Length: 470
Image 1 (cartoon, rainbow, N blue to C red):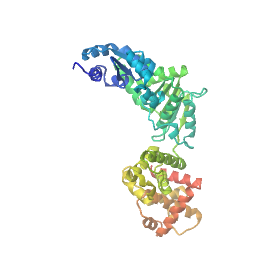
Image 2: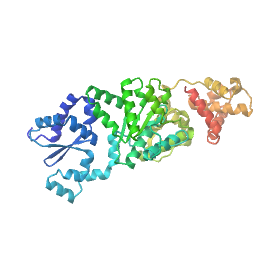
Image 3: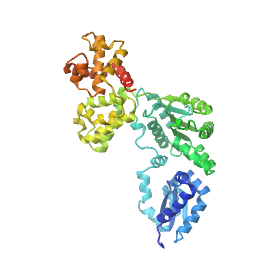
Image 4: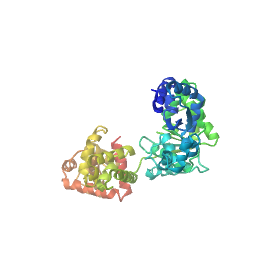
């Protein structure tokens, strides 16, 4: 006990603090703090300057009491922010002369950290940003290019932009990716400016805890001193009057002070029925930017980018058969996450052999993972839907008529049947008036060719597949 390491003393101190402050408050302000030792000096390193100030104001006296109680060696505990510590000059001022001289002679751990993890990267990790979600990994297309350009403009700190900005779209459309990318770019562009990123759920839980602990002033200071506030999934606050009230006043304070606010939601403010009217009105007063479902070309682009990433991580060639990628792009039309998840599944199963994977093999691998999430689609359902879409009768699709107005929809129906059912080619043929499996194969290949050449066919397929999957 006489030689208890500082880390052990801090562990015992933390256990008491966590009990006294509560899990949420401790996690918000002290959970990411760390301990650094240099000779006889011990420094508690807060994650940010704001966290350091909160600790000094609300917890430092108690920390000192507990530290003294648990440290038989009587070491003095200092408090600094991480940026202060990572600045060599700031820490060397607190070092013994011998340690300071050693810094001048050879690289130290702090200099290595500064080289490997620059300030922007450290700030991003402290915010909880996902490193893979950047503008470089965001695939832009007609469905999201306006939102993409708006996000880039905000991230550049350019003047003359709308405030606040709200990106909205259903689950899996890339909103969180875009918000993370915006945050990373903003930090790298202006490392000295303060960016705050959190989910609406985190906003709510932290605010409720602050109310319980009578620490709302610190909570407000943390957010209203931000140069850029980013809140993901703001629809989460709907139906929570007290939280909405606080968010409303935070929004007003930031906008009136010229600070920037960007949020995401799963739908536009007008569709969030339980949102307080004043908050809804102020969200609509800025720029409400919808993100549409990715079209086929964009889905293919996303797959190619994801494949390149996986190949780089796994050390294999970023190649796959075109028909496999086309199958994924046509099968997973509703969510980018599900689209990427399907590719992850294939790579996990076959790894470096992905380039040799056939369409039948890919369908076989993915079928067990999909069947529980999809309603059962039959050939009969497909025929009825396609006939309705092209203003035909279902009987036309199984008839002997060869006019193009009937033959092309018939081929479309056969192609869809091959994509979304487990029926074999001969079985599909029998359900289309007893046709041979070679006829079905020809239809599948013809539509595969046309959908990359004919925008009308591609749109028809998108619409039909979405309707089939509800």
